Image (cartoon, rainbow, N blue to C red):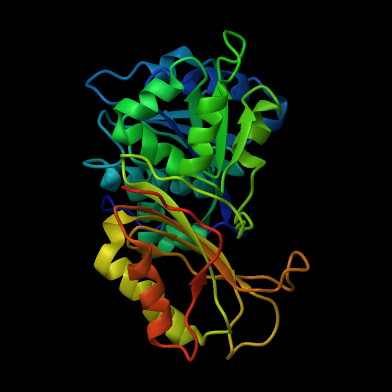
Length: 337
């Protein structure tokens, strides 16, 4: 129960929710304006949060009444995590009562200074929200003109890029996307797709990526001074579900603040059938999504870690400790932090 009101009834199926983030001036509001003009987006609620005492973004968007919900002022990643959960409860309660049309999707636009990881943790830390909502994707806007300089200067921008499922390059009408920017983004986040924001219809930019992305197990990553890098590992043989939970859970408990994102496909020795799609953000491990079969011919269990100031040996040792054979890294170069 929240706000002294009954918990709303669960939707008949989990509603997809996407998080739209990006540094100040990257073009989030412009993208949302195009999205809200798309007829395919008519059944979607947009939640907007701004950093400051007066919110303006929601006033810049032309939308039907009730389609845009302005969060209380502040930053979603810190003081307003409770407000995020309360607002989602309120939306679902109004949907169940008929006060809002039966929307089928939700978008949360964060402040340009927000770090997405605590937001994702909030969505899974609440048992009701975890049952009611399904995280579709994290979409990060990157400015083609100022993006490289922004990544150099601001930790928030680097973390927004590192946690994305999709990186959308904005302002390509003003300047071509620098190769150095693309290389930097690929180094920060080898899991994400990188597209110009005008490539797809606006609504597909936010909900077309899907989850979970299939981890790539052969890539080269160079770490930069910010200490963020990626590590791909192959599990030499199937782990038990308990052994895997101890390994990943122990890693999250000890180093959760620096475990920015984990994705993987893992087969378990004590469960027949297809692999589990694994997803974790910082201290939060999401329930596995069981697939009926492997999505391609590569049937090896593999995981990709995007971490900050966390050495590869710490990760490998966790997965080697409880299993007959150790996990190993494959063709991943981490460079110097």
